[in-house]
Every structure is written in C-alpha cells, then in structure tokens.
Image 1 (cartoon, rainbow, N blue to C red):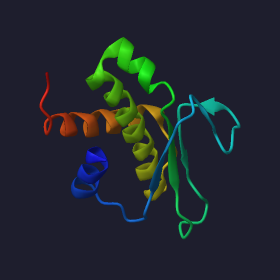
Image 2 (image 1 turned 180 degrees about the horizontal axis):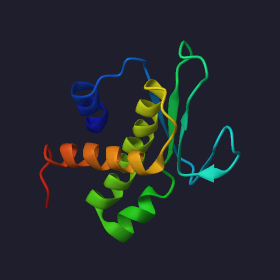
Image 3 (image 1 turned 90 degrees about the vertical axis):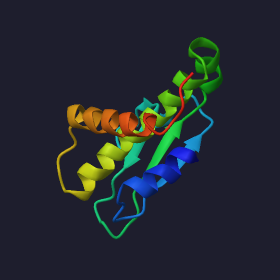
Image 4 (image 1 turned 180 degrees about the vertical axis):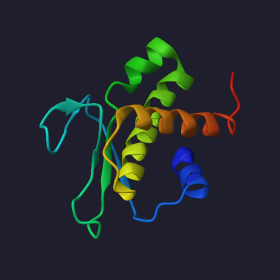
Length: 118
C-alpha cells in the first residue's frame, strides 16, 4: 500500500489503472492465455479502464528464500514493470520489454531512496 501511495504522489495517471494482487502462483494472460506472474490489460478503447494483475502466491517462499526486502521488492518490481506497459499504452507506443525494464528499474530506484534498508 505504501508503494501505491508513493506512486500516486510521484507519477501522473491520466487514466485510472487498478492493480489487483492475486493469491495465485500464476495468472492467465487475457490475450495469450499463457500463465504469467503479472499482466497488464490494455483495452483498445481508452475510455475503458486498464488493469494490472500481480500473482503473489509465491511470496512466502520468496520470504523464506530471500528475506523480507527482496521478497517485497519482487512483487513491487512486477508492479513497476506492468506500469511501464501502462505508460507505453497511454503514449500509444508499441510494447517494448527492454524499455519497460528500464522504467521499472527507474521506479524501484526512486522508491528505494525513500525507504530504510537493513
């Protein structure tokens, strides 16, 4: 919730985007039908709301394996990645995974500067 509040303060969202956190290990991509850890729904009509779904079913395993900071960062990075696709959609750009990774890294670096680290 802190990350979402920070995002709303730091970035503009010209079209509302809802982010759903799902308890599943994976979720089905609406178009490709693939099982993925996160997905962005980009409607053709910009009057229809987009949304993001993030699978969090492996959080407890990540917590045990990586620790709290890294487990949480994994979920937040998925959110930032999908928001990169949101901004590509807003700007009518083709989806580019490399650029989205840069956007996610940028968001995560900015956010990490606002947090205490162990």
